[in-house]
Image (tube, rainbow, N blue to C red; front, top):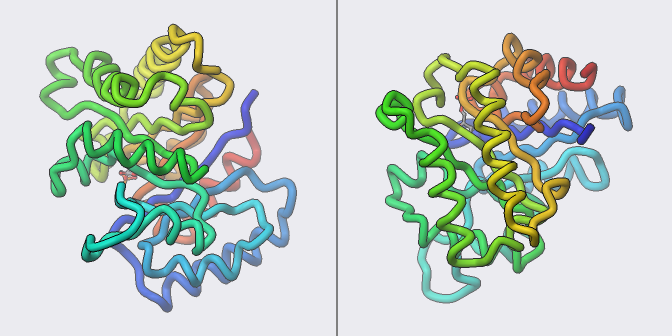
Length: 254
Ligand code: 13P
């Protein structure tokens, strides 16, 4: 069985003192567990990554970014490049999140460009896909997920998915407290893996499929008991140190 992965997405939350406090506590927890700790990726707001970099050097906790630009440098005010992220010790980058698709009008084309630059920099993309409520109710979940994957494949070729992470995040489940049912998530994850397996250039062993959407300490165990849920992408519950540690403890015991 692949080792389960926990990814924390802090979104637009936190400040210097609360992140510093969180890092101190997590660092102590890490030193108690050491090698017994499951793999963890934390995506703080980018401005605070320098704080985390100092803590987790050479440890089993990795840094993620919530976004990146598809340009490498130049006159692109306000943007951050893959090389800047690498400079700050980042190894994973979230992209295609429904919040960016919606509020920042990120199209499949923009997401594919970001995917390419992330892979070229040897960083690991965490590609978010998932359906909205209407699409779910009209039975289009699988169709939407496949379309979002296909958009990347048609621009970059199937091989691009090796060593990547896909996060299935139904939009209606994000921040709603309403998690998708584990057996239905399992079905979608299986469908994503089978779809990618069709391409001979993709090694399914080199892809993780995470679930995100109202994951917390009460549901993580049932979710991760499903065969094809390789880990979780946690939003709200990752902001609270106690809840987050409970999630990690549960995953460690699986
Ligand atoms: P919540 O866990 O708050 O539902 O957020 C999920 C998410 O969007 C993670 O990227």
